[in-house]
Length: 412
Ligand SMILES: NC(=O)c1ccc[n+]([C@@H]2O[C@H](COP(=O)([O-])OP(=O)(O)OC[C@H]3O[C@@H](n4cnc5c(N)ncnc54)[C@H](O)[C@@H]3O)[C@@H](O)[C@H]2O)c1
Image 1 (cartoon, rainbow, N blue to C red):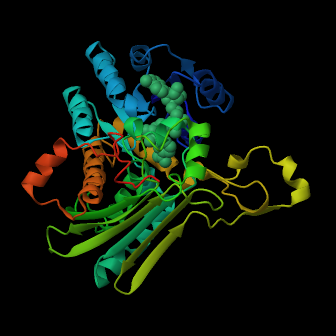
Image 2 (cartoon, rainbow, N blue to C red):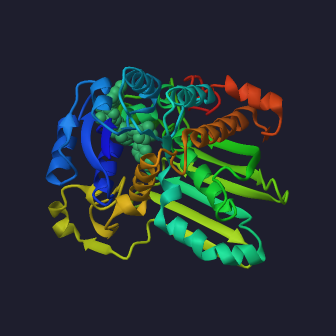
Image 3 (tube, helix red, strand yellow):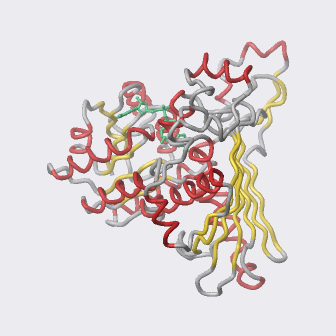
């Protein structure tokens, strides 16, 4: 399958490195505002395919079997609109992949789903954490135990690091919010997945209610706010976003009526070695835990040798240190699930089907994130079984995403 990338930044590079481990697919094209030449050179030198740089989405689509939307959140609607136009003009795509979060609002996610339905194209929503081998293996291993003893009743999930690498992530009006929009989508999805009885569809358990809090704990303090302005060009006195979010989503099994809970925690103020993914699941008499900072590989670099390390992120995503005892993950693209998510999409599209997670599923995750913003903003639990609440989510844009949350977040 000839895959074309739209976007050539941070995640495109990660996904390209994952494609080294995917069979049956080549990276044959890229379109991006910046970084396309570098990505194409990487693809060629790593034997991923004869990757060409295209000057438009229409040309890329015409020369690909599937395209992956790996560009910033604020460009989604325009890009997917152009893909839909390319299909109308005759591009014979077999499917479209899209990075998280599907939309910055429920309305945006719904429009994206509509565009692909109209184009009659299979979709893949890229939520890598559900494809992590550690998560899949834990759930498969525990399936017989869960069947006997009862399902996972509490799943906790956290994704935290010291803050994103590009200014647009920090700007809530372009990104769609702060850390809840950016990383809460991962944690909510992976907990929902862990709670589902093994083998059921990813949306089997029905969301019942959401209760969440958001806060600006580090990057609103004047010293760090100034640093952020200088480094990322985003002014948190005017348009702040949350750097911490936590909450609880309650789900119900439609067959047994049992209620189970997903607790999520996300921050951009985790000043430890680098990115940490932490998931655990508790069932009656059993448990699992995944911690991405536990690696079989440790490296020590003393002060005298520190200059030898040119790039901290060679060791770990969002790494913050280049000396001392370092956690090093030998294959992050595989660890985080990128290999398995591309593999799943390629094989599904080859059979004319949606991937395990389609864009309708991405829309459900967008809804849960936006309901979390609503809960934090209104200071109450959001009842997702209430038709009026669902209707209000359709037109909801959080104060944070509107760039009007200085009071809500208590900027000093
Ligand atoms: N699954 C994950 O863990 C994960 C991690 C990082 C980013 N992401 C998601 O991936 C997406 C991209 O993030 P990133 O970190 O790579 O961003 P980035 O800023 O590093 O790179 C964005 C790329 O898109 C290009 N671009 C910008 N506007 C474009 C447009 N209109 N048309 C075509 N290309 C355009 C840029 O030139 C650049 O090449 C975001 O939606 C983000 O949420 C997911």
